[in-house]
Length: 253
Image 1 (cartoon, rainbow, N blue to C red):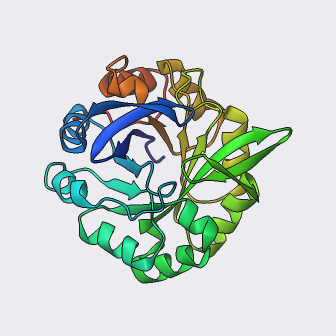
Image 2: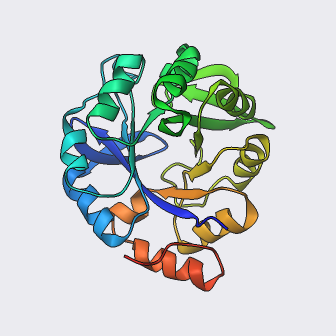
């Protein structure tokens, strides 16, 4: 059985790691390089970086921190935010990232998924989806959760995989930063709809939230930010807890 992954998420603005609640009220946390090294040393399985205002500010993603991170850590990491062209994908990968996460750019131009997968391999192309519950369905939002689309999150995940995405990150806007736990229903629907690895995102407040995600849904990885950044929960403590509950997890450092 494949081991489950624990993935810290680092939202980046102006080359600083920030964090907010439901994508609002961002506060400064640390530098990407320093925090990446801390998480790598602590036993994170991989990292995810998002330039959280690149799309809403209609600018290119900032690449300057990627080389610093790549030279500092030896675990995989992905980078997203403002990725709209094949050149963006190429620059991120050449700068040292292992994967490129595409959200708004894929909604605006779905062919970007296919082109990226064909040129660099589907394992390098991650479809990131920001979803918000509306009635009995989940709407897809772009531009850092600021703009609603007419896409249904479950249908969009299926289409993204068909187009070539090798992994899905599904983030619940409703749960983001609330520490009230993942949206388990959303995770169940997404994992049932696709046959690629799915990373759960949005809402971790306690170690039991990680366990619930792995026990109640078929996600391959659990992503968290606030509880790690503020050192409320350590990665090693999470892994020890999950292993004690028979979740296959990589515990060696």
